[in-house]
Structure formats: C-alpha cells, structure tokens
Image (tube, rainbow over all chains, first blue to last red; front, side, top):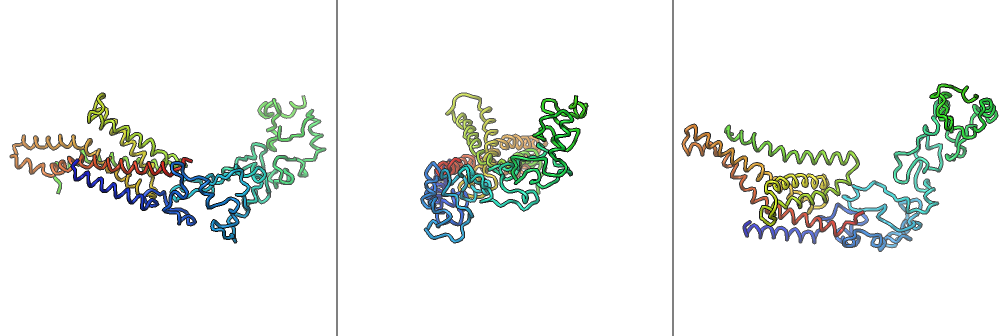
Length: 249
Length: 196
C-alpha cells in the first residue's frame, strides 16, 4: 500500500471519528429518541452509563417514581395523565427498562406495550380492569374479572383457555356463561342452572344406574353426548361398547 | 459492440461470479424475510457476533500467507477464508437488516460489501481470466494471426483483465476501512448497550 493511500485512509478515518464525537446521535445512535427526550439527543451519557447501558437510577434522576403521573419532570402538575390508575408508586421494585425503551431502532425490536406485570403488587395484578378495558364482544360482555383464567400476563392472545377440554358447548349448551358459572366465578360451575337438569332428577337417574358419586358432573360428562361418558379408571363407555347397562351391573 | 471472446469471458467467468454475489444478496433478503415471518428478528440482532467471529477467524489465511502462521496448507486456509468471509458477511448483512439508523455501522456494511466483492474478483475471477485470455491468445496465434492482430482480437478481454488485477489495491485498504468502522461500531455498542 502506497504512503499516499495510507495518509488518505488515515485522514478519512480521523474525519469519521471526529464526526462520531460531534454528531453521536447520527453516527452511532440507533434512531431518534421519543419527543420527550429529544433535548437529550446529543447527550448519550445522560441516560447511558458507560459499558452498562441505561440504568433505572439514571431514569430516576428526572423521573421520580412518586411524581410519575402527577408532575412533569419539570415539576408542573399533569392535567391529563396518560394512565388512568397511577401504579408506578406501588411497584415492587423500580425497573424502568422492564417496560420502557427509547431510540426508534431499539423500540422496533420490542413488543409494543410491553409491560412487566410481575412488578405490580399481588392484589393489583388481579385487578386487570383497572388498567385494561374488556373487549366489546358477546363473550367478554358477559364476563367480569378472572381474566387470568384465559389470558396470561405476557400476551392477550393466544388465550390459553379451551372450554371443550372441560365441557363441549354444543347447541343445547349455548348459554350465557353465568348460567353455569354463577356470579361469573369461573373456578366453579353448576349444571343445575337450567330447567333441564334438576338435582332430584339427576340424583334419581344416577342412583338407578348404581352411581352414588355424581357431584362433579364433568368428571364423566365432557359433552352432552350420552355415548361419550368417561368413568374414572374405566375409560369411555362408547369405547368399551357396553353402553349404560355396564354401570348398572 | 462485443466480440465473441468478450461474450465468452462474460458467460464463463463474470456471470458465475455475479451470480455468487447476487446469491449473497438473495440469501440476505430471504433470511431477513424468514426472521421477520418467524418472529425471530432478535436473532438477527445477535448474528453480528458470530458473523464478526467468522470474518476474524478467516483472517488466519492472510496470516498464513504472510508466514505469521507457519503451519497448514495455504490452499485450505484460502478456502476457509472464502467460505468464512462469505458466511460471515451474510450474517452481518442479516444483522444489519434493512434498518437505517446510525451512519457508522452502515458505512462499515458498505465497506464490507466492497471488501467481499473485491475479494471475489481477486480469487474467483483473476486466475480463470488469466487462463482464458492466454488461451484466446494461443488460439488466435495457432490460426496464424500476427501479434498485432492477436492483441487487437483480445483487446477488450485484456482491458477487463487489467481492471481486475487492481482488486488487491482495493481489497486491502477497504478491509482496513471496514475493520476500523466495524471496531467503532462494536466499541459504541459495548459503551452504550445494556445487554437486556
């Protein structure tokens, strides 16, 4: 390599190095900051600790947890808070980066609206509706609370609940949730919520068959199909091919 | 106007070379698409590390060639250099994605691209082209053409060949530029990144 070329190369690299120090946000910054942080655009170390990245401690220099949702970082009262329920003050520990990020190029890799529910106190984690609105569909309109039975704290979808695993909702059982789950308590159910099944009638039928333990209906009946009755330890009646008579033996 | 000899050089040598360069581009686009489709974009972010390791590892060929490393077959080291830099470049290109954020890493990516192409010119085309031009010369001489007529017949091929001999003048300096810019990018990541 000629000496002249070496000089040209060195000069170019020196210019690039100078540009990096003068315009770090353009040369090495991974995209624009959010508008609220725009005045920090060229002051990388306002948020970044060398070799450790952004730290909660640096966030809290401007964003004091006790003031979040109440006062701006300049101490002015907030007229219209972005969040309906202030919760930052109650977090189990302050970990800003668990939910927040900045720089357009970094935010692209993060799930929008990422929120670490584990930072909330246990009782607040059950109060989903204090922050989330229930969807306006026929299913959710009937339900209040107990969101965690179907949805995880990580994602709204996929919802993990599959009703068919417990009981198939065929056309005869296409009823309001509260018919079986009284007071929308999905940890319990009753089959006596409609006129078809009365305790007396069910008792009589089962005693006739010699069945004395019939409190937990779905233990044997996973659907309305009379050929799909599963006796604990005896498999499906339909599979055994012996029908209902077998129970009476 | 192209002579039959030039067309042959294009078809036999430059076209396969172009295809291999294009393959790098196509593999990058497909890889990037798959990472997005499979919701594995975060994998692309970390591909920069193995890509860099592969490129650095493939530099052992240069050390062997300059006798800094004494052992090993130079030809094997060269194959490793070619495969390592091609794969490493693919990983770095996937790592870069099609996201235009900071200038420095993109300058490093462009320098890497020029480096890869100049390296391919040097090692893929030069040897074959030399043989090709020499073969053409001998063929024309056998047909009884004079020296001047032979040189006229292979004029465009010679010009193309001469242009390709300049590859080394690009390859080494652009590698230094690439290394310096990539180092700047890596240092900035270590300085600012939170690793979470």
